[in-house]
Amino acid sequence: MYKLRDYQQQAVANVVQFFRKKRVPAMVVLPTGAGKSLVIAELARIAKGRVLVLAHVKELVEQNYEKYISYE
Image (cartoon, rainbow, N blue to C red; front, side, top):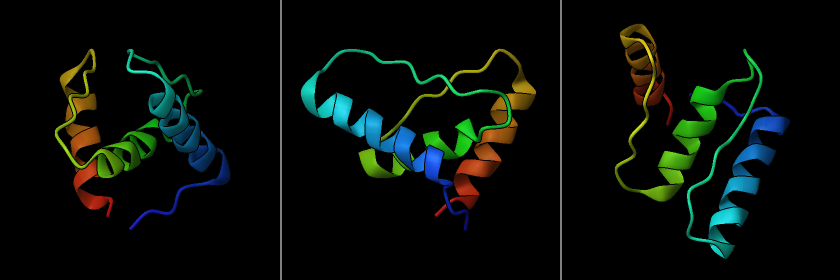
């Protein structure tokens, strides 16, 4: 189980707040090493549905998948 850092929790809260007001696509920008995978995992958990995450290389897809299934 991972615990989100304060800035990750804030990113999640900002996205949730955005989608409560609007139904348009959004982009979350975080610096390298900020834990984007965990933010995505938390948003997917909240959404309770299927989520499509794209990456430009297969290794990132596999790496993210492993993080997602280990995040509860």
